[in-house]
Length: 173
Image (cartoon, rainbow, N blue to C red):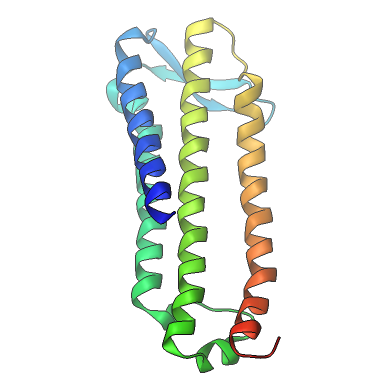
């Protein structure tokens, strides 16, 4: 399953970068660089390669940080903090690895969500630049609000679920 998530994330990253590079020669002279809360473009700049590739660049940095955190979590069992830390610290190394794999899976899912979000933002910006409208398409607005809210809900779910998982592994069902 983990290989599938890594392949999906690699594919999304390649799609974001490749699609962005494909779009460069088609861009008009000016592209939106900022959208307000209502999804309306509030500022524009010249359509240079650097300006256009900022969103994919930021996406790669964010995903790199998330993957780095997942890597570190797998290497340092004491690097995570759970609500019932003493129970977690008392777990056997094999049981800690179960928890660490769960946290890593969560982080890889965050990377997927971020890549989807950045790809939708880039595609929506392209749509605005090419269509002559100054408002994000519905999918761009929904993703810009929905993905962060979904990530918040997932983080709260993890915060609720992890202590229960630790209790079960420690034998305190």
